[in-house]
Image (cartoon, rainbow, N blue to C red):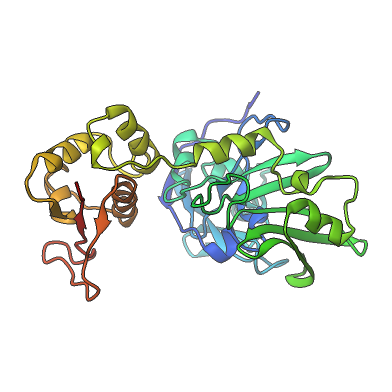
Length: 352
């Protein structure tokens, strides 16, 4: 049971997902598990976003805590810094020392200690959920004995085989030459890869046709199947792969609300506001004799007046249109919309 006092934490900045950090060699350092978790079932992760910033007011003084790229120990790991006006803490490798050290420096005769995750808003579900903004696939880890296998990317589902998805990536930390190392496993068009890194330097690289054969080639972790170490035998991986096997359709099925709802929940539900007539958008378009639309102008008809679209929303709509059989026919020399200069006014076509 959490006995910590409830604090009024405000999210100031959402920050950003940086692909080379969140999906790179040190990806496992840039995702965190929150709440009560069952390690046997697998644990979904939340991103530690660069630039994420929260504020906490104590005695009419506002303490800001921010996530940075790098700390004193490692330039590619998260760093945490707390600020009060023009005073700053050191850049720490965990959030708790950042705010605690600054607070004790400024407030005499105190032994107060703060929970870093709580100060960053990660104990507040409504704030934590916002960290997933723009995250198409939420990574997770599963356990194989003492090892945590991080499933970082599911890859493309263009192939018929769910398991051999191009781009699938999993990693874990294990020993190499008696020192800690990061093992990156990925499935690519030319086969299954294992890359072993220490201090950001690749020490070994193996490639073979299957997860089992590449681990046999490496002569490491012999007590396990390669599919175990890739995370491919775990039920959560199977469930997640099945969930992300995207349904597609064409205009023939636009009036099938079950199919369209499935596509909506996959592509749009978490990426835009909910009180829009998204389904009527497709029905009206189908009834129209003109099979071509300008995306931005058409969307403004179902959104509130002067609604400001976010880039992720328009990307989600583009994915939705592609999944429902529409084709982007925007000319190569794209021109900005006169109404919305930030976005290209993509032109879409459906065929009967």
